[in-house]
Length: 223
Ligand code: PMT
Image (cartoon, rainbow, N blue to C red; front, top):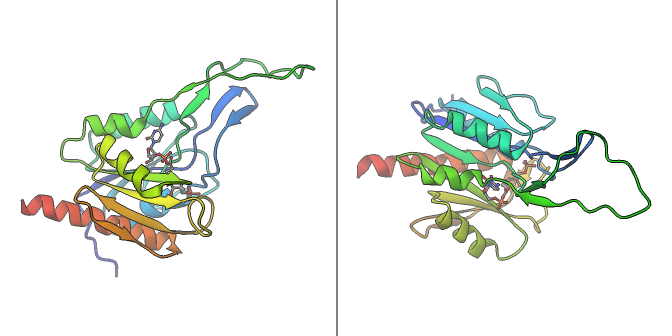
């Protein structure tokens, strides 16, 4: 029997990629499958939390007992997250949000010409940064997906965006990051604690991330 140690928490999880269209049939996206975020939602629910899952397009089935919000673009994800933020006691941002979107979304399919095509990209909102600004007692967990300088970049993201801890995955390692059922994660927190974990199933990694949430909540309650 799983211990219901997250009962009383309302955990908002984001998962999957975003899609940024430049015409009705084409878009920019990334390789996120949603597996990491769905694993967190699944384990959090099993452990008694109320869970809201905001997800970009994936092929996964919705974990049972979870409130599910389907979105496509980064701006839709931002709106869904902010609308559900007031109830959330924990936010875990496992989604791979596109940092840029095409500046213009053409209403009709772009026709092929003999010339090259240039598409201008503009910045998307940084969702986690916005949440960090209205943090209150909420526990905020981010991810860092890096292909170099993993630890330095992760620490900079955690501090700059007011996260309680960050889960870093190294895209250059076999079995880590996108698509697969496994991940290799490191957890870095504000006290300088650094937990480097071996290759494991995303469900197991989710359980360790949620243990860390629980630990931070306990230390808040004891202070
Ligand atoms: O979905 P899977 O196939 O299982 O793959 C899992 C994963 C690799 C996608 C996941 O483990 C992961 O690392 N997710 C975060 C990917 C990412 O966008 O990292 P980043 O370093 O670009 O962003 C840092 C943090 O800011 C992330 O928590 C991200 O959700 C958030 N962010 C980023 C950009 C943006 N515009 N808004 C955000 O909130």
